[in-house]
Amino acid sequence: MFGYAKKDGKRILILGECKVRPSKKEIERFERYARLIGEKEGMNVFLLLVVHDYTPAIEEFLKEKDIAYFWSYEL
Image 1: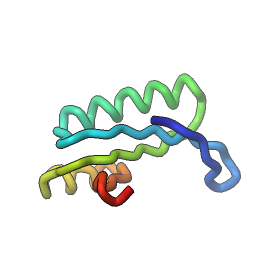
Image 2: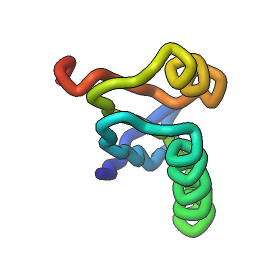
Image 3: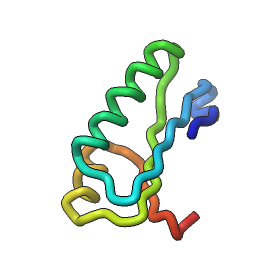
Image 4: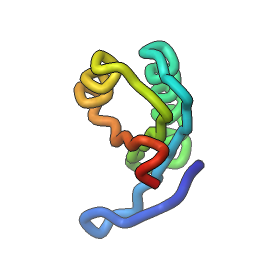
């Protein structure tokens, strides 16, 4: 999923992904793709992950990576 928004007067690209139970490898892959897309589009990217379940280790990993994440039932 994707969309556009404005932050501090600049247009940014919002990229999201939905996963049942993401792994670190899947999150890193998502980051790589997002970086490439952001470079191609020439804009900053905001990453968003919607998950059904994650472990405390994955939650900490997402915090370290500064990726916004939500439980699927929150939406």
